[in-house]
Amino acid sequence: MSTGKQAVHEIARLYRDHVNPDLARVIRITGLGTLEDQAEGVRVWDHEGVEYLDMAGGYGMFSLGHRHPEVVQAVADQLHRMPMSAKVFLSPVMARLAAALAEIAPGDLQYAFFCNSGTEAVEGALKLARLATGRTNFVAAHGAFHGKSTGGLAVSGRPGYREPFQPLMPGVEHVPFGDLEALEQVVGPETAGVILEPIQGEGGIHLAPDGYLQGVREICTRKGALMVADEVQTGLGRTGRMFAVQHWEVEPDLLVLAKALGGGVMPIGAILGTPEVWKAFRGRPLIHTSTFGGSPLACAAGLATLQVLSRDRLPERAAAEGAWFLGRLREVVARNPDICAEARGLGLMLGLELTEERFGGSIISEMAHRRVIAVYTLNQPRVIRFEPPLTVSRQDLELALEALEASILRTREVFSLSTISPQEA
Ligand SMILES: Cc1ncc(COP(=O)(O)O)c(C=O)c1O
Image 1 (cartoon, rainbow, N blue to C red):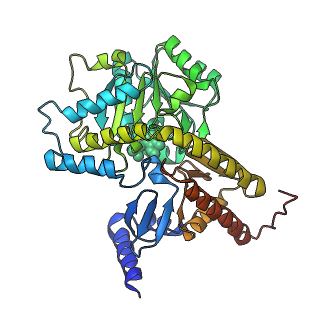
Image 2: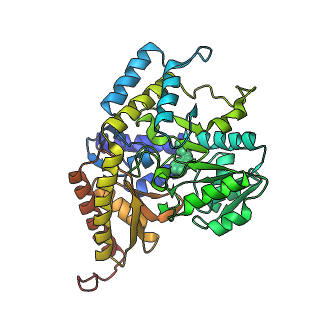
Image 3: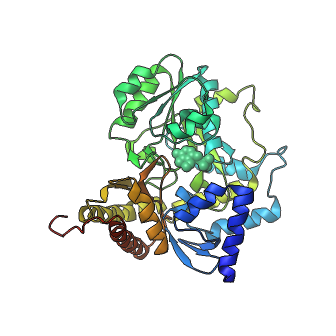
């Protein structure tokens, strides 16, 4: 056995005996049963030096690409000064990040609480919504994904992840995403908040229909419930605007962020809220806390990330490159109607819906063989998503399209489907 193969074998054994045997199996089936070793920009190298183009972008985490030099430098500087907070002084780097977020956030989302992940941010936002309104219940959407903690799962919409853990947090109703009438019916005097992703990510890249988020805002305001925007995946430029709610000019009461905020270098989550919501902390400043949350290291990464995003106009870049890529994806759909149903999305948060679920795994593993990383959405395996770094070049997008089309062709062969003639397409 080659030393490369031996190394894979050894790590697969460690997964089997000490991590999660089925997870290792799933990773191998997707064609990426190799060892990640190094990464830079839009590329990842395995332990044998094989180079991959990253079109999944860590599910939205690598908006600046891997190891962005300015974020790495900011974190390295902070590492040698003070990585973790003593938690008993004022933290300058945390305060500056909160102010920088307030400057770019929609409406008067003036305050920030920092934690370590998207799930934690959702969990904290649910608590704050309850505190601020004195109400207990929530409304969320079918197909939603808000994390896998018990609160996050309670508002998430995939039965398979929820059922083994029932009873979850009570008082949650799910309605179809995009249906204002259904929402109107369930938001009542006990509703603390309505939590939604402006574009459902794990649910299969579904955009809020025009007028929907404005309608949600109106219903929430009229009924005294808070509007909570989960921008963990859509936030910070991914969809072509700094925040996805800005496409519809909506100002939520609470907005949660994570993934891209750490610049792909540090874990960090944030809850942004209005002064009205933040009254919940009055007289009880320690009602919601986190030991690691808001660490100087993570906040230094966040500050550098915001600077790069704005200076390099990455939201605008995402809008332009995303529109181009979506146009090309639609051509792929038109040429392959037996396998591809639809391409959709905004900016560089794009999804390719397939006609059948079984094609997803095949296309993804074929793309991996062609050294392109792609993934499907967690709640909807029929949708392959593309969320590359916002810095991705046109040339790399072209490479990804070539790999995609070749993978579709191969999938057609594997499933013994007849070849589509240009006339049929
Ligand atoms: C919209 C949304 N909310 C919350 C989460 C959970 O974030 P994390 O995995 O950082 O806990 C995710 C993760 O994919 C997400 O997409």
